[in-house]
Amino acid sequence: MTKVAIVPGDYAGLQKEVISVVESARRTAARNVNAVMTAAYWEIGRRIVASEQGGQARAGYGQALIARPADDLTRRFGRGFGKANLASMRAFYIAWPETEIFQTVSGKSVASENVQTPSGKSLPPKDVVDAMATAPDHLALATRFTLPWSAYVRLLSVKTAAARAFYETEALREGWSVRQLDRQISSQLYERLALSRNKAALLRKAADVQPGDIMTPEEAIRDPFVLEFLDIRDEYSESDLEAALIQHLADFLLELGDDFAYVGRQRRLRIDDTWFRVDLVFFHRRLKCLVIIDLKVGRFSYADAGQMHLYLNYAREHWMKPGENPPVGLILCAEKGAAEAHYALDNLPNRILAAEYQTVLPDETLIAKELERSRAELERRGMSGEPGEVE
Image (cartoon, rainbow, N blue to C red; front, top):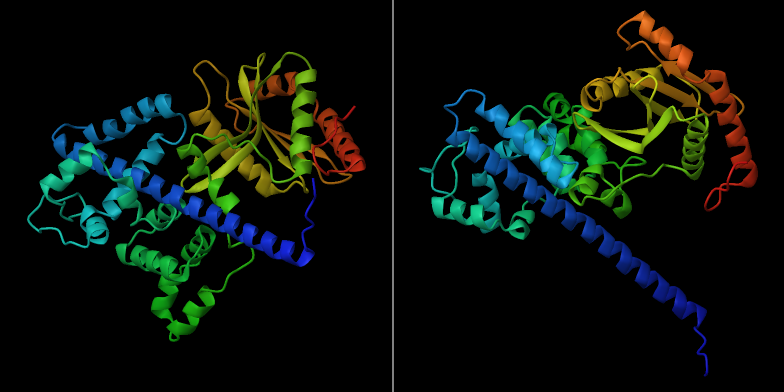
């Protein structure tokens, strides 16, 4: 069989075209997933509000309408449908009501005499609502929601409708990523524009792309909201070294005896519109508590301690089971040549319990030495590809 040689110049051109097709397809896929997900969340919010209107005479009906579905949907679909998320969907629908959405989707205006939503905006005709209730057209709605769901969640934190509309319009016009949108809202661009004498110059400066602003299609797909919606696990680290250290630390703790029971890795938690990841979660059988472990590849700082206490407060409220003791935190700092380990015990309710924890938990020096040894061995072997085993 005769082999046909590929001319290098022709191959380079073909390779460039194929790469362009794949990258374009990935961007399109990420946009479509986000748009359909956002449409579904808007539809859920609409139905929650409609049910609230039907039962508004009963005290506590609105709260129950969030709490009960949150429990049922979480059992059915897993993460992504907790009370905070359902509340965001409800707020999303109220902030972007049907009058605005259906004018965009169909190009037709809605009669003003229809039922009023809590925001004071009118609903579309009853036949349209009934049709939506039986068969919502996610693809049609998706054409309206051209920003990712993460962007709408960030926009919901903007209190005034005028400012929210400004940020949405600018994000669409300038093609802002979620990171850019977050930076503009955090820097109060809308308020600064109101005070500025040279608004055009300020807008031009705001449009400048900063390092890290642009999200790759892979990052868009790995957005925690998208992973929840698609029911995909997202246990990964930011670097090979970090991933290898976490794995070796997990193995080391499990080898200390049967007190440590592995619970999870890269456990996600959401506070307001910010996502965090806890590197490792164990359950300590003798102490009957969760052990939250956070790995830092740099030097220990007070900010690390503050973040750990944030994790502990969240774990105590959302992860702790009845009969368990309060969780304890372990901060591991893996700076080269200066590994450290610090237990966070300040959240415990009394000194006796804190003293018991210190007696039972492994010595911090022992963990720090293992961390430093593991890092040195991993760096010696090189971090290309899959990390090797540490003896």
